[in-house]
Image (cartoon, rainbow, N blue to C red; front, side, top):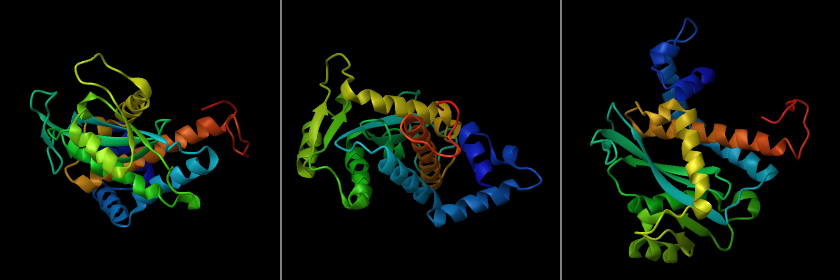
Length: 241
């Protein structure tokens, strides 16, 4: 059942295309909803982040937030007119990553929502790390943002939250700086998981569950790739993944 949900996420096909004699499309959707209700996908994402933090270490002193618009041809609760796709239905992911590009949390909204109002709920995702291993968050956090966030309201919000800011200036050439890691993570989402690149789900909680599952896979892959050079274990692959 879990393998089939990963196939839906990766290939972006209809449940009926994945269904076979062992599991019908209806059973697959029912089990998905049961696991969402039980918080399985969120818990899986947290377990992967815990493992990465314990072995490699999350770099929470520098975080980056950015929005990514994707297609939503079926409409739904978080669909809106896309400003980059001739007004067709689309959805936006406001993503938070650490200094290495590890996804820390995501907020889903219609494509026509501006990035700035999504900044507060996206940064609030850091609350899940407040008591991690008894250490808590760093004393000072620097938030890296693109020119779309260059406003007095954004700076006032970051001052309220006690965060430093590195914001690209409007009207100047693109300044990547430390922001390139979030562009890479957005690429991992869209190129590795077709369900996220073309979102055919209509309910917000289902979309969030698939994003949490994708984040767990990305985090686990980065953990294996990094730990391959620093650790040994029984089933360690012969070459770096």
